Image 1 (tube, rainbow, N blue to C red):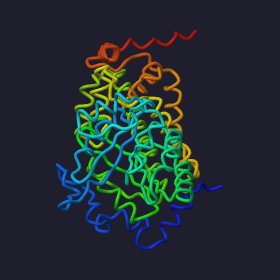
Image 2: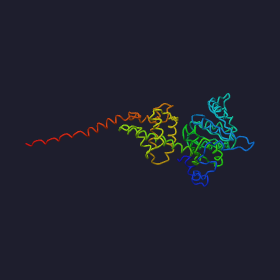
Image 3: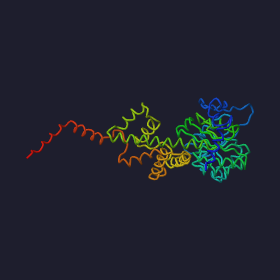
Image 4: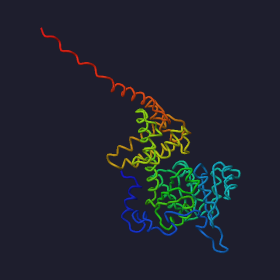
Length: 387
């Protein structure tokens, strides 16, 4: 049967204003939803004289969430509350950015501290999976006012997101949006992320936009709830697939005798270049650093979500093959492995590592072939004498 998120996306395509076709065009967005924003953005929501600051909140201060919440804390006209399961992390954030740590009493940042977020109008969550989204949102929603907005920046499952959004709206009147981000820890620190927003309510989305715009340079309205998570899953599938393709090509060139750095210097000014050849392969793989900052198990999870989306496409074969390789690579690495170590799976199969200056075996082979080609041909055998 067709998943709920796909049916909703089809219905949205047939609606007028507010449908996918209308929302993705910059001219169709309200001024507050401009796709690109100049830095700094502290004055996105200015206060009138005597007006009280509006309360927003952030939950999940990991490698991405910590700097994202820092940008929210700088928004003029808002007070930003921060919550984390480890209370010390929230307190450190408050000290660094001027946010306000909550849930740090006897509960030590546990779920019982969520009631301290009751006054927030918009709450952004940056958690590992849809399971954590549902766990926290279900405990948080009863404390919120009707009309409050919960925004998931998790790389989550589209169908689970739709079920949760429907449930929270029916029981508590709380809006739930999917708004996964791309750009990594560097983009989070710079406030230059791309947001993929899924929303069933345009008016509520306009209240969310100034908040998520604080840590992003582009907000794309992808369609109904769940569509943002679907787009993000396919984006990450393409990310790691490009990395695998680039690595396999370099391994073949290295075997042939071409230095991988030399190959990249040509590729990266030619039509085969990508983010992976320009940045990830030289900075993380050839350097043997493997420290981009996104864990391979999380990438494998995103690839499983993307595989679910791809099941709706008859005959899909290219991406599914690459995504299956990601799962095998993940099984070979530690839980803390960076996603760029997916390349090691290919290296083990090839029996060599990608390194600058490598390719000597191929060079020796090429030299032998050249030597063989320059040697004089053996004399032709004389025909046997006839009796």
